[in-house]
Every structure is written in C-alpha cells, then in structure tokens.
Image (cartoon, rainbow, N blue to C red):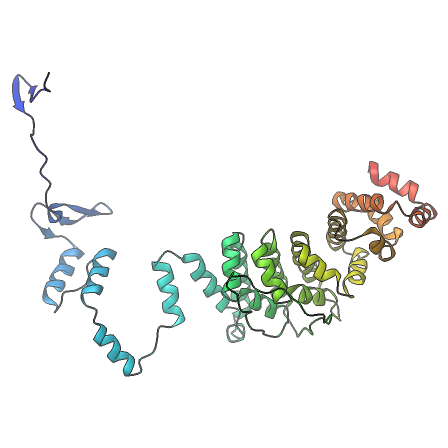
Length: 371
C-alpha cells in the first residue's frame, strides 16, 4: 500500500509536502552567543554585524566579514601577486618569528608555537631583563609539560631545544647536527673521552633544563639519538663532576636525566660507560650524603646490571660493601631495596662475601630485610 499523503489534525486533513525546498544560505538566521547577528527573513544584519556590513558595502573591494571564513575569502579576493612582488622589490621586511607563531596558532599547531615562544625566553637577551629569570623558569616548566608527549619531545629537539637546554647547564652553543635521508641524526663516533668545560650557570635553570631532558629521553629512541649526537651524556657527566660541586638539586636532576637516557638506550649506556670518568663518578654518588642522590645512583647501577650493560666484575671494585650495607639499613625503602638487590647480585664474588662478613653484614642485612 502507498504511504499516506495526508495527515489529520483537529478534524481536518492536510496534505503532506511532496518535495523539500532548500532556501538560499542568505535566508538562514544567524545567532552568536544568543544574540541575533543576521535575520534570514529580512536579509538584514543586526548589532555590530550591521555596522560591519555597512562598512563593507562602502569600502572599495569590501571589508572582511565577521567570521574566519569570510575573512579568508576576503583575503583571497583582495590578494595580488604583483603587489606582493612589488613589496618584496621595495625591501619590505620578510615574515618574522612572531608572524610564524600566529600562523601556527591559526593552522592548528598551538603546541609547537608555544614551545618556540618558550624557547625564546631562554636567550641571553631575555635572561638579562629584570624579570628574565622568572620568565625563563616559567617557560621551562611549560616546555616540560609539552614534552611529556613523545611527538612534542621530538618537536622540542627539531626547534633547537636540546641546544638551549645545554646552554642552561653551561655548555657553549653548538650547531644543530644535519639529518640524513632517514631523518636520523648520526651517532657519536669520536674516540675522544674529554668532557666539555662548563661555563657558569644558574642552578635553577640548570635543574629545570635537566628535568626536561629526562622527560624527553624516556623511551624515545629519536630523541636519544639527538642527545648522543649533541653529546648530552657528556655534558650531564661533566655537570655531575663539576668543581666546585653543583648544588644538590642540580645533581639530582642531572643524574635523573642521565639515568633516563642510559636506561632507555643501550647505545647511550655504552657511550657513558666508555668514558673513564663515569664509574668513579657513580661510585662517589653512591656514597653521597644526600639520600635521593644515593637512591637514584644505586637504582641506575642495578638496572645496568640487570640489562647486562654493566658486569659485576666492573662494578665490584668501584662499590665497597660498606656503601651497600649502610644503604641497606637506611630508612628509605627504595634505597634499601636497591642496595639489597645489588648486594645479592655481587655476592657471587668470594672476596665481596668476605668483606661483607667482616663489616658485620649479616646483622645489617637482616635489619635491611625486616625493617
């Protein structure tokens, strides 16, 4: 049966529409935030939109509309390639960095634009301003937030963020390494084992920069290759070996960054351990008076042992049993666990077991296990 062509309402029958008639777009009534902007019935603008329509009608070539689409259409209609060439010939300034940031915002790239702006706060001119240090610390905090994303961490490297972070810890400026066709930066191939000479640095800036490097390095092979090419591991090791020693906060963050890089990359771990300054530095930090520094150092050494990156025979002469026994009886649970695990890993050496017994290791290990 055919569908009904009529509807009955209030005792009367009415025919149904036989076709749909679409009105022209200019017949659509438009509201913005609950306010009438354009009346589709009368074709008249209302409020500020009415004034803009009158200006557009009076101006030669019209004026941009109220929406982004209308502005884009107006820009295309009123653009002239000949005029742009004429301006270029007259020596007018090219687009500046601020222009690029605005374009990034309009084209849906707010994160990269914000990261570029934040990096601009780290240049020496900005730091020299009265409030430059506070602005730089806020910028580094913002960058760390963005770099929690792997993609943004790689963008951070592409826009020169690694170099800026290195400058914050006192490394002289260095160029961006060239990328090959595979978009991978070349790994460090030099046999030179010298650490860079660090210049003066602000402790707060250095700690914040190391924190960003730590976040970016975690499980990110692309960023790790960039760090190796720019010798970030050497700069961090130089910071840990600096004289006079860096502040406790800087040492903790530098160790965090180096640990993240070494635990996530076998190439980085091998590059660090090949440096003669590395193991003596870790041995010194393992006995540091700061609990957090000791905890991070022992955890790093334990991870390297478990990954077979570091052999017990290499670690044994650098790590006295007294250091492990003291850590094993510490009130910090994480420090105790790493110390006990390291003691167990090194217990296959007879001399090590004898030194542990002579140092009263039985009682102290018992305390560590049941504390």
